[in-house]
Length: 444
Image (tube, rainbow, N blue to C red):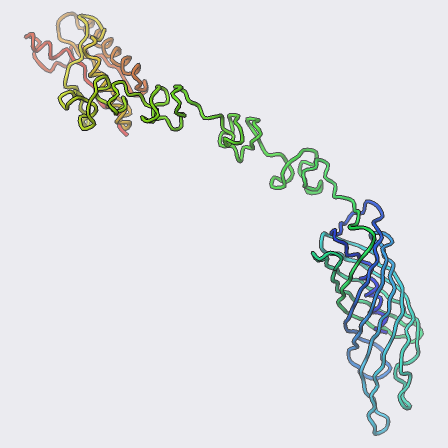
């Protein structure tokens, strides 16, 4: 009857151990033996009751268990079940309540386990004593009988050491009575023994990276779980994976996000990433830029970098010193650039205006291409004049590059005598035609 079913189910639960360590699915060796005590309560249905339509039965029970191995548990217990019913004896309605008391023994076998959930089957046998046998002339509980039990359950391991909870179902068969019943019941179990935890086989993890071999796409090479057990790329071999390396092509310490230590190309104590003039030694207070005349205006924006000046005069002693002006189409020079006669050598007296050109170009990074044009008067052969103007334009370009202007921004061009701005018949006119012009050909 149902009582023995319930008892069997309870027995199975008791067999499942509730140690502090969560169960594993693979067994390495016989585990520490554990004794279990379980309490259960639930409902049962009898398919061939001695009286008509008795309804659901209610059961309670106690179970004792012992772990023979981690997957096999021996169990025994006591189960009590009560049914309520009525029957007619002539014109009289009589109560037909009856009880069953089952003493049983059996075993459970684990089929599947995870870290929290444990599934199993179980079977057992016992002896069922029922009462009362009769009420008046009516048979109620019937004869006592042996019981054959079979069922299964699903158990959940809690975070509380030793405790677990299960839901079981059990079918019981009474061969002498020809009766079958089914029970369903929850159960709570407590396990205690001589060890703190069970010894189970750890999941195979050949490379010890914490990713089980069955889930590890690189089972023989260490790799994080986030990359499915495979090592992440480290192109520069600096120990910082590319995903976290801000300089994946250059080795550098982890403390610097995988980048090389911050360089200081000009050795002025200001790191390049903070240095406004990384290739020229300067002063920290000038953001790494030089200030040759110590007027507090860095050379790259000082139009008179060799003469102390005022901020309102762009670093010059007065605005009268400003010889360079930027227009939409050109950098206009308010003073000529002087060369030695028939040569491409710039005279030193023209260095200040060229330095102002350097300052202007540093102030105007939007000027991407500047054409330096050399012009001559008409005296002498045309081919010679053209060659001289080209060499003078190239001399100006070299001077600007030496002062820090990028070569990619400058284009020298010799025009010769082709574009005079004054007559070549007078000394003054010829002097005006001998000139350098700076034309903006590309602007951002």
